[in-house]
Length: 160
Image (spheres, rainbow, N blue to C red):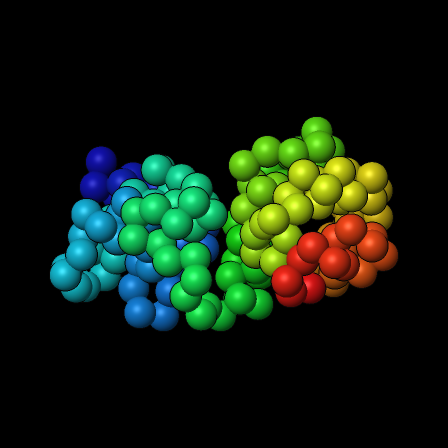
């Protein structure tokens, strides 16, 4: 039983690191619950709690200790988010919106025009998720091109 739990924990670790920062578990419910704790186990528990209780909502809404005005390593955040949520993003972009698409819009600097962002990326779904090409760096680059090609997004997005 102990081996099964260890294997399960280690298999989940790569996806949970999407909610991590260099200084610890970042923000979210897990960060609040394990604030002041140190060590690998505390960080893993905080990360898994964030994954369970939707850290992406906390980041986009500015709740649970997430400061949306703070300076972050945005490129890394984008890459981690796209990597960890690639499948869900694919589904939501095809549907024309959802919580993950709104989070992606925010990470791309388009939070104030997230509805237009969702519509634009839905129209470009075939380009964004073209076969094997849609790895994180390609997808982020294609998203930048979608933003630049749309006058509304180019004017409404703060970063591209």
